[in-house]
Image (cartoon, rainbow, N blue to C red):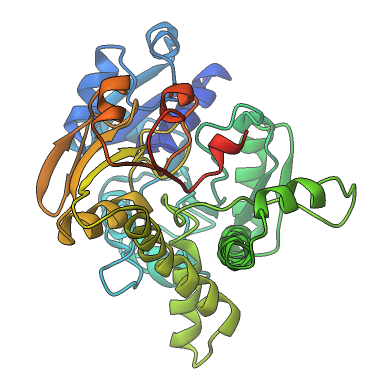
Length: 407
């Protein structure tokens, strides 16, 4: 019997995961509330750089539906994987709106025998304290009528070295029976699964992975600034330190940390700590350093320019190399800060056709020698592979936040 899988949320995590399930000969139903994504997929078009059009076009085991139009297909599925976003509010508190909405959909439409797996990054306790009470309103009993599990996503957009199939998969279940069901399923998909004792451990695992990255990237950003004040080339320091074959992992400076994970997940943990009267001075300090980085970049630009020089050409507004994602991108804060100070802004990004700064839409322009020549300074915020850096090197003045011109 051909098993069927529903994936709720077809973003940077859900779409690659759905296609992997299909590749493993599962019949896969992709569900999303974003009609534009569904229409693109039906036309065989990808909206994620890591997923090629031809992969979507050739995969016969995958179909996409707008959420409310795919209920009957959803109810025929044996497994349901939830990969909705978990953003933060303006006050840096967890926004579980998408998780709650997905859970409400499940409460209303799930059927007996389904294994429900959440992959959205969140604070420890979410599955048992937020999701489970909603699902219980269905009158189905977890561990008996349906099986509830949590497995943190480990997708790294634009990383060509690690296919998600080969990244070890941490899994957990609400009960032993729930863990058994996710283990059977995921062992048929991934090369290695790593069972842990509880959903809280699995949820915390994901947060800690990104807390570690936040702390280390904030450390190198601060050290880079301090070395600059001392007249030391920190990139040369990094290169030298990286020759040590043990006990050292290089992290690289930038204009700040962006994306859906590293700047967000530690705040989920801090929020959970505060609910319990606790705090982390180290994470708080790392977050503060990261938040200040865009302002430091703006000051570096200001130091390069005379009073009558106002034209800034920005290269890259995506949060990281070779992705079309601007969520939490430090470039947004940098660009908005420069505009507020009266600078004229033009940008080039091969992955971001348009972006909104201070409620005004800007469009990416071609990177040409003419554009560089008429700019007073070039500001490098993202080190995309597709950029012709030889053109940038001919600029009159450059503020390079990625060290790309040192290569």
